[in-house]
Image 1 (cartoon, one colour):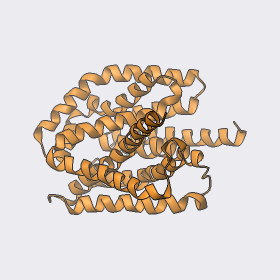
Image 2 (cartoon, rainbow, N blue to C red):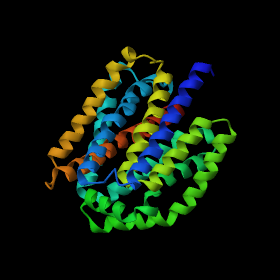
Image 3 (tube, rainbow, N blue to C red):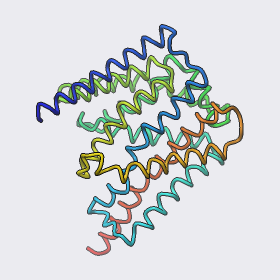
Image 4 (spheres, one colour):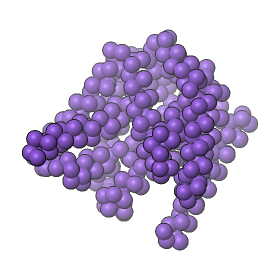
Length: 302
């Protein structure tokens, strides 16, 4: 690894550590109140700064030789993406608590990808589950209120009790994971995981999640995907990232417009997280579907 790259990683991690410490100090010092307007602002930030990393999906699938994506099948692939997204939105309308459970499960699987370098899928999953469950420890009531607001169902609050039940075990696994990352020389990842866990434990749920999602998960995934595609300069990836990110924002606006009323702040929060789930569903499910049909095709032609 070059000296300049190491220096860039060090600067990024140092900035993350300083930002995390500052956010904790400001919150507990009373200078960062968590009003409904702040929650709405942070929720919108999740889309603006978190959306770009998912815009490489189609390009990554096209780049994966095993899927054999051709020009003729691109329209079908886009249709499959939109179908999965629409199905997720429909689930929110029919069974919102089930949709929330599905979203949390997908988030654990997806966030586990960030920590593959600990060399244990089980431990990587533990870090991801720790991040999801950590807010239940100190901010359980706030998390319950958010779950109820998001689903419109009072029984969604029971999910927080489940997260509280598993949080200590998951945090134990996460601690092991951070130690493993450090031992394997992945110091930047270890510090990033530590900062993310600190934020998710100490800060209010949306604030902690915004810090993790926008400053850890999204930049990490964006960098990995861009490297795989060989898109290292802005001029190389802007034609992919900007249009698709704007399309994702348009979906969030549409979900907001189709909402059931309520305050603007609550609507922005709910529509932002629903949009994340609607876009996460095809992000996670489409590659699995393609892999399934590819495996069947390979078996039939063998």
